[in-house]
Amino acid sequence: MSVFLDRNTELQPLVDSGITASCGIMRVGGTAGGGTTNTLTVAGGSLTVNNGTRDDDIILGQGAGSTATIDISGGNLTCRAIWVGNNPGVALVKITGGTLACTGGAGQKLFVDRFNKTSGTILLYGGVIDQTGDIYMGSGGSIDITEGTLLFSTNASGAIKSGD
Image (cartoon, rainbow, N blue to C red; front, side, top):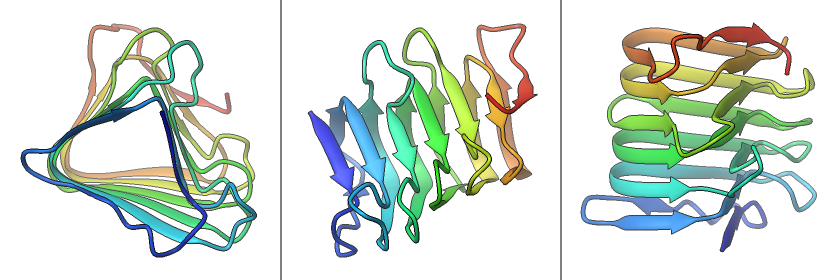
């Protein structure tokens, strides 16, 4: 199943305590022509996104003029790969608690400003980013670690790299 939070600004889903959800693909902010502002909030519970063999489980900010946010204050968001900023949109991942885990199988990647065309930002203000693979940072990407933990688990060679 695919989840597209990009066709209507009214879509602002919440994953809260007691909720366990999963899907294969998630797009937040703009694949349908852009101009939307969408936020996915993970305040508890668990959301797993796994597209199988590809490295594009979650894509944020794909459309021109779109803004995509994932706000994690508790619970767990698990994926194989996440693109924070893709093409001309703007993307933000804010973590104040809980865990963002890119650990769900082969090809675990975290892309911040995937194609050097956008603004992709990760704010780690608490909680954990559990990254099994590498982090790829484009020219418009940034990671601000104020509190919390950036963990390269089960991969001694995990690194932050330029481009993709």
